[in-house]
Each structure stands twice: as C-alpha cells, then as structure tokens.
Amino acid sequence: MGTEFITQIRRLSQLYAYTSIQMHEAIGRKAGLSGTDHKYLGFLMQKGQMTAGELSTLTGLTTGAITGLIDRLEKKKLVKRQFAEDDRRKVIIVPDTKKIMALLEPLYKEFRGQSEKLIASFSNKELKVLEKYFSVAIDIMNETTNKL
Image 1: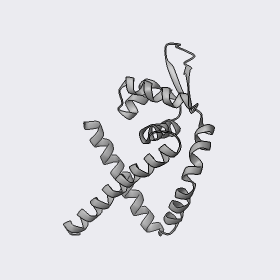
Image 2: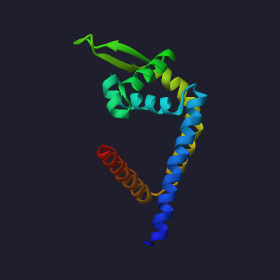
Image 3: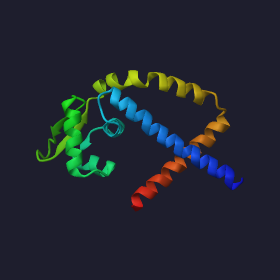
C-alpha cells in the first residue's frame, strides 16, 4: 500500500471528522443548542446519570464550564440536578431521555435512515474492516487524549 493511498485515507478521515462537526453543529442549532452542548448531552445519554465532576472528567471541561453547560441544559428541561441520597453535597446530573429523544430523533431521522442503508450495502467482510478501523482509531484517539 503506497503512501499516497494512506494520505488519501487520512484526508478522508479528517474530512469525515470535520463534516461530522458541521452536521452536529447544525443539528444542535436546530434543536436550540450549541454544537458542543449537543454533543455533551450525547455523553449524558450514552453514559447515563453522573456527577458534575464525572462529566467534567469525561469531557475535559473545567467545573465552571460544566456548571454553565448543566445550567443551559437544565433551562431547556433536558437534564435535572438531583441530590445523591447518601451525600446531599453531591449533585447527580440526570438526563431526561424522553425529552432529549423527542427533541433530537426527528432531526436525525433522515441521516439515520441513509446511514443504515449505506451500512447495509457492505458485505460482512467489509463491515469487519470498518469495525476494526473505527475500533482501533478510537483506541488511538483515547490514548492520545489521555497522554495530553
């Protein structure tokens, strides 16, 4: 495999990442959120309820930035603050999954359908290659992030 082909794949990977950011920013705006608030809301959806400190660690944001994020999401009634039963000083951020899905699902419907159609067009062998690429690429990004 030549270096030109590797460079082409790297460029496509970068373009995919940039295009993904643009799409999520547009979806976030349509939902009344910034692109970053939209993506961090996705972390809460994926991981479930967590403390503000856990969300700070997960996102790399400062605790002050997390407080602002939670305030914005709470104002839109997408999350709520809840005191931990065992320690009332600890605040748990609880996503309202039903409201979040009602807000975002319609905005992703066409994209999801087209993506599923695209995935279904690949053979099992091709899907294994894609799975390996994304899995290993995610590991590499996580390792890089953890070293910074």
